[in-house]
Structures are given as structure tokens and as C-alpha cells.
Amino acid sequence: MFELLIIGGGKMGEALLGGLLRAGWASPERLGLVERLPSRAQELRRLFPGVTVLAEVAAAAAVVVAVKPNDVPAASAALAALGDGAPRRVLSIAAGVTLATLESGFAAEVAVVRAMPNTPALVGKGAAAIAAGSSAGPDDLAWAESILAAVGTVVIVTEAQLDAVTGLSGSGPAYVFLVAEALIEAGVLCGLARPVAQELAVATLLGSATLLAASERSAADLRADVTSPGGTTAAGLRVLEQRGVRAAFLDAVAAATARSAELGRS
Image (cartoon, rainbow, N blue to C red):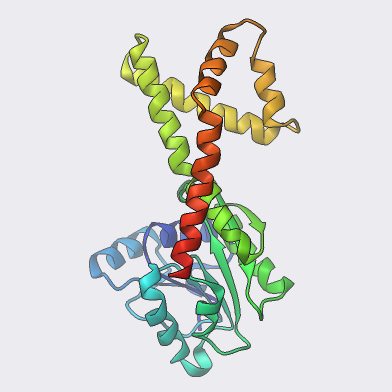
């Protein structure tokens, strides 16, 4: 019996497995991965020697469900059919699949935790939120947190807040990439070679985020530090405020949150 079985060998499944191995969460032979596509399964065996890559689910103490939402019912049914080999803990990162839906596929005593991670988990810098199901206690949340902490930051929320998490951090990388695109294009417009503009834009975003994470001061305070009265930054910020950039971000997160709630209901 595996200590943990990850169902789904996509990019997020790969990222979680890699993070768990790097963190020493468990030895390779205690971890399993389910991937039905033969070519992808072979690639994963090459990437993670010692980890068993299977075409179908197998007995495990706990599982991570990392499949597409439409594939969750089939995965749940296959796990439930294992009988005594069915998991006692389930962590789902399937977008939009509610705890009620997840729990309906398992016995009442199975602890189910739902998570919303984001794509920076692929480089170990993810942001994830977890919410406990009706049978999940503090130990189960700590277990789920230990898995996702291998690839980034984890916070605990209620399920009702997961839609807002989706709107902010789930969709957030796309907002940041859009800002990066715009900064690069602006640098080119103002006379920089594209490779130079890209290097400067990426380094600026990375450095600023690192400074914010390391500082005890707020984003507003750090912004004020850069903004000298009558200076270049003040001129640039005035244009952004005039164009409603702040309001646009507020509306974008609200729209993504509303769409997440709509998808969950459907």
C-alpha cells in the first residue's frame, strides 16, 4: 500500500511529486502516481526513478486527486472500489469540484480536503488555499498543508472563500504575466531592445515581489518609498491611476471570483 498516491500525471501532479521528493516527505517507493497515457507515464518514470507510475489506481493510505474536473467521478469510483485499500484521506486540487461532490464519492469517515493551488507551484513558489470537508479535522488539514507546502505557501480558508482565492491567486499569475507583457512592450516603445526590456521587466517583478515578501511594511508603504514628490515614478503612477488600473484589478478579481462560483454551481 502506498503512503500517498497522486492521481493525474499532468503538470501539477508532476510539480507536487517533485516537491514532495525534494522535501523528503516520503521515500520514492512509498509514493505512487497514476497516469494512463503511456508516453507521459514513461516520461514520468524517467523523471522520478523509484516512484511507481501506474495506469490505474491502487491501494493507498491517502491520495491527491489531480485530474480534470470531469474525470473526478471516475477517479472517485475507482478508489471506492478498492474496498479495504481505499484511502482514508483525500486531497483534491480539481478546480471547481465542491467538497459535497467529492465527499459523495467516498465513505463518510474519509477525510476530504479541497485545495486551490496556482501554477507557480511548478517552480516551488505556489500559493494555495485549503478547506476542510465535514470529516476532516486539524490533523487532516495539517497533512494536506504539508503536501502543498512542498511547492509553496499554504493558507487555510472556508470553502466559501475558495472562489475568492481562485479570483486572486488562482488567476493571479495571468494578471502578473499581462503586466510583464505590458512592461516589456513599453520598454521597446521607449527604445530598448526587446531582450533587454524583457530582462529588466522580469527582474523588476521578481525583485519587487521578493522585497514585499521580505519586508514587514505594506505594499502601499513600499510604493511610497519609490515615489519622490514630482519625480518620474509619480508621473507614471498618475497615468496609471487616471487610466483606472487599480479599479481594473479590483474588477478583474471580482469577475474571476464570480465565474468560479458559477462554475462550481454548474
